[in-house]
Image 1 (tube, one colour):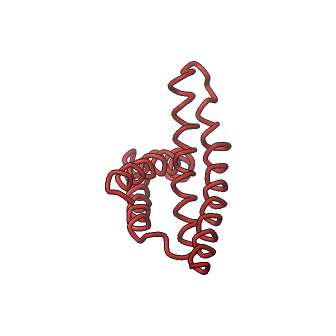
Image 2 (cartoon, one colour; image 1 turned 60 degrees about the horizontal axis):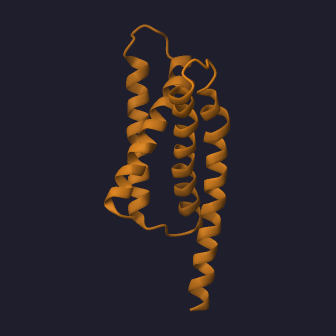
Image 3 (cartoon, one colour; image 1 turned 90 degrees about the vertical axis):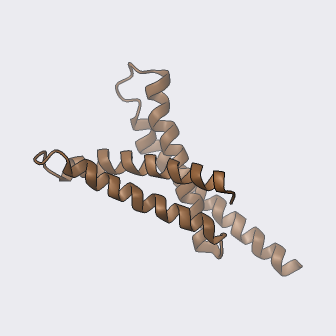
Length: 131
């Protein structure tokens, strides 16, 4: 993947992972005292996942499972970001708008991305065996 595409996908994965891990995991399990602990844990988690996405996109999609995981991560992050931030931008007075990204578009994006990665890897294997 090109350098610009890798940067875009890694930043998107970072933002999606930060908000997802902060609001759904760390705020729920880490107490309020000290107040910096939950954002720090979410930041570290997002940095690790963005690094995984960066190296996975550099690896060149070798094998079925890495292709499925990479496509699932990318499409899931895009779906989560669109469903989470879209309602906040277009209907800011809707109090349950970001739940669309958390419960519908994020998980659905992961499933669609995994299926797309499976189709891509099987298509590449079929094309390689025919050549």
